[in-house]
Image 1 (spheres, rainbow, N blue to C red):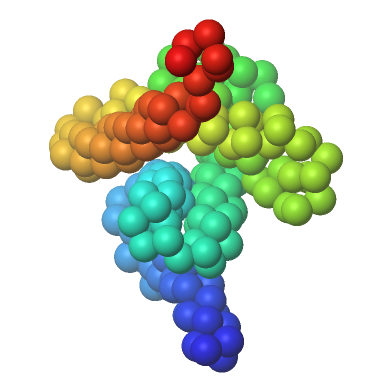
Image 2 (cartoon, rainbow, N blue to C red):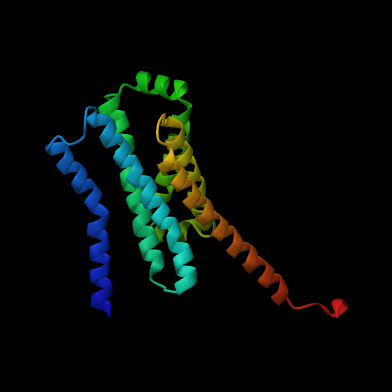
Length: 208
């Protein structure tokens, strides 16, 4: 059983790296179209959002299946969302603007959709660097509060994606629907647990 779990973890890790490998092959063989830099930028951003959605899907799956090993996969997918988001951000800084900070600041000021991208990345960055057990112990109850911001990061990412597109909006709309369903599930389970908690509170003598 332990070998099966270990193999599943290894396979999952390899699969998570496949998008980067395929992107690298497309760069080498010049399969990125007329604007390769934009293509790289978009594909890295896409995969960051996809892994963020996958990480958010783990909670409903865990709730339904009761499998205790799911949090480890949620952390793995969340870290890959951070990984691809960091590459996406690095391409913007280095390849698009060559670390020209005056140009970058001007671009951010003139392009409101970038605000949402930066906001989402700041959250994902904070979640990424506090994902360890050490950080969990240090932050205590604040760890859960911080990591609930992942939904804000997902919403901001979709707005960032939606706002910058001028053509087909099907994909960002799909992400918006997925995140809305996941957030609705989270709110529903929280509300249900809260109501059950109130029902289980013993009544005082004065209420009897």
